[in-house]
Image (cartoon, rainbow, N blue to C red):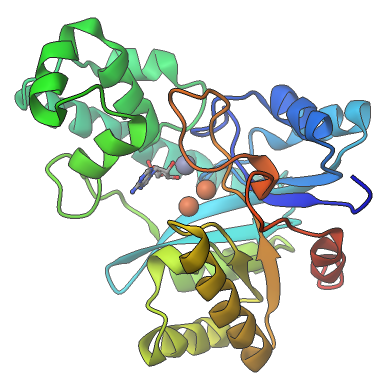
Amino acid sequence: MDKKYIDLHCHTTASDGNLSPEALVAKAADLGLCAIAITDHDSVNGIERAIAAGEKYGVEIVPGIELSTVHEGKELHLLGYYIDWQNEWFVNLMNHYAQVRTVRAQKMCEILSSEGYMITYEEVRSLATGNIGKPHIAKTVISNRENREKLQEVFGKEPSISDFIVAYMIKDKIANVPKERLLFKDGVSHLKKIGGIPVLAHPGYDLERDENGQKFLELFKSYGLQGIETIYYVNNEEETKECIEFYTKEAERLDLIITGGSDFHEDSKNSKIGMEMGLLTTPFRIEYKILENLKKLI
Ligand code: AMP
Ligand code: ZN
Ligand code: FE
Ligand code: FE
């Protein structure tokens, strides 16, 4: 690759990614990416190891996080870049939200059991090495042979992790247990408090592309939001193009920066969640220039 490409949204085993920080960075190097951000859900635990691996493999590592937040009942994900990930107050806060995830996972397992699935919290806990997320629960159900018949009955096939999450664990579905979350506004100020740059994750999935969405962005800007994750794959190429166009204009209008990432989670072909790292299998690659602009805000 002559141009330098990056990925500013990657998960590791510190949350619901399936690659360790070292394996993630090694993969980035293999793909020829020159920089990646570690953005685990409510966890900073993958960052130190990723930085060490980054030195070994020659990949620039951006320390980051993806906070689960809520605004007027709507779940919004907030990315934070260049955070002081060793800040004690923040680490303690994230430990609290890890505990929240544990309690929620226990409830989700109970609900799925009463739906007729074989699943225990202990199985999920032993699968997850970090913060427990919906994908761990879906994986635990799907990989248990004893659930095969029931899954076949419900889905007519072996469901993917996404299929299972969509059927049971998204908004208004039976095993979606709402977790205690930070208010979006507080998430923004917490990130700023530890020197981070707050960026709205995947707006293409979470906001409407109309005046309503524009009003939200204006409000978020007034809270201190500094960027929009504009380059993010949404459903298909056409919709992705629409999103990139819409949010690029919005970023210009509101003087916010643009970021981009794949939301990489999974390395395996049969249990894929999301896209290939760097969005390298799509026409939407993310250039190093984006990171240069982000760094100007540090
Ligand atoms: P959690 O942080 O436990 O609420 O889980 C959020 C994660 O679940 C996301 O980062 C995705 O990995 C996965 N997820 C959520 N909604 C969906 C969906 N509609 N399709 C596929 N995966 C999803
Ligand atoms: Zn995730
Ligand atoms: Fe997200
Ligand atoms: Fe993510």
